[in-house]
Image (tube, rainbow, N blue to C red; front, side):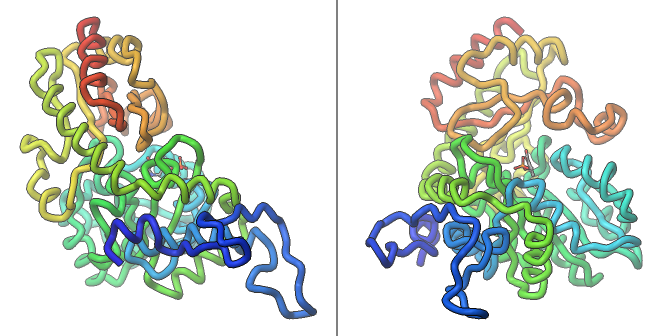
Length: 380
Ligand code: PLP
């Protein structure tokens, strides 16, 4: 099956009892056994559920993976992957990742003896130099949240193999439409399915995908033990949203490129980061390792924090909201919203200024969004 067909069809067959073209929502906690020791493949929904299984089969197929595990949130997926590690282990993490990941590493997992070194993953030498005999995993995002840095997948896989450590990639911003890290040789791909993979601001969800049976078994065990599973209804909504992923992503990307160009030429805008712009520092790498640039833009206004505040308070169509990757355009202030828990000093060190604005471009008519930004900028 070609990719676009997999998005719509992989893992989904008509319901054998009714012919329903869409899978039923199996809202059940448990399953009646045929006899002691013999079930129909399901015994308790914390372990597995038929609707969840269909979603997992689809997500595995579109990420070029063998195994997928669907979680109640992106963060619970992150947590399960990190729980492959033990007290005394060392993790290397990109320095521009979702603030919730650093919050978890610094405030929770550090108390359980997991040590983390943050590196600028754009520079493979920095990643290599951070390896210690205790390093067990490299955790990266590409493009990163919120500065849209591109990490060289080939280089990361090379380092991970050379030092026999796991490579985990949070691919939420790229989606499998534009990048499939397992095809490069990554060990684990993670998504917040809250974002593009469901795409309609309806659910909170996450997924881990891998080709390695032993990692799948361990992560599945962690999920079953802790219980952060996605509900059957959320899985069904996710499956619905997924069916248009390839179409939505093309539109997100087309509109984002137009908006990035508009912002770049606007005299109130100091700079714009969008991997599809030639001015992006890793534009060439993005072009070679991704088949598209997705729908996220970061920018800063000449008037700094106050101008950014005016823009965000004055837009009408762009929603001032904490999420991304949905059909509606959303505008975010990372310093006070998504990355508020990263200490101010660390934010500054990572180049995440207080004036930074993040835009998740939706699939509305792009002219309307540009007009909205234009009128917001006149007041900034
Ligand atoms: N990874 C990235 C890149 C994110 O942007 C987010 C949320 O914004 C997460 C992980 C966490 O996902 P969730 O909010 O679904 O728990």
